[in-house]
Length: 228
Image (cartoon, rainbow, N blue to C red; front, side):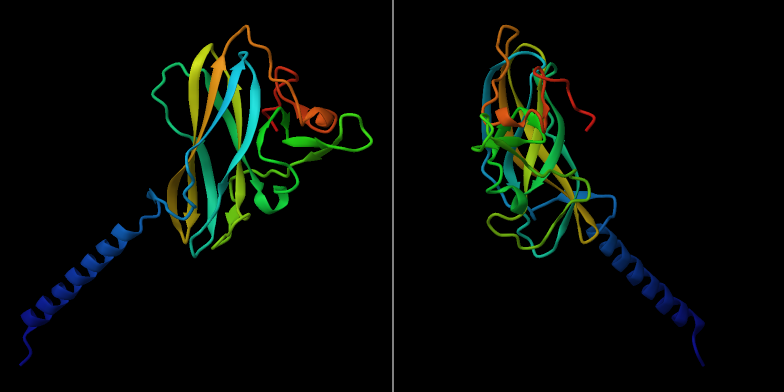
């Protein structure tokens, strides 16, 4: 004669096991949870000093690699500035872009720029040189392929604006990316130092001098093209 209570006990036991397995799986993977990432190559903390600038000065810095060294592709979802404890920062980040490394290296050198998109002059028939502009893209949805090597990936393009007088630092960047359905966040340390002084002269263009007809000059030389 079969024992109903035994069948119930077995069924309850199986249900409990299934619930425990489900809970364990959910603990490992939660679609809305952002975990600490390690897919991007670690970079030494980079610092760029801009010296004295007037309030309202804007400048773009193309520097630091985003390189995926993991075994699976990653899709960039967001890039933001790192939080600061300074209640009155003297500079801010306007926005971020990416420059595909394979289409920028050897074309436009890294560093600061006073035009958007970043560009530099090269010797030619024009007295100020022939202009070459960097190819830049919006970070959202940009895919970094797996196992990227030297010279691959993307350069971080950061747009800064000087605000109130004083000396301070602006730190970037926190990169949120998706890999195999999971969101991760990883810090790419880049620090820009400013000394904002209302008596300071605007930064002088150097390698961008031949690019003002093809690219938008940044303030105070031109209007702020922050809507592009």
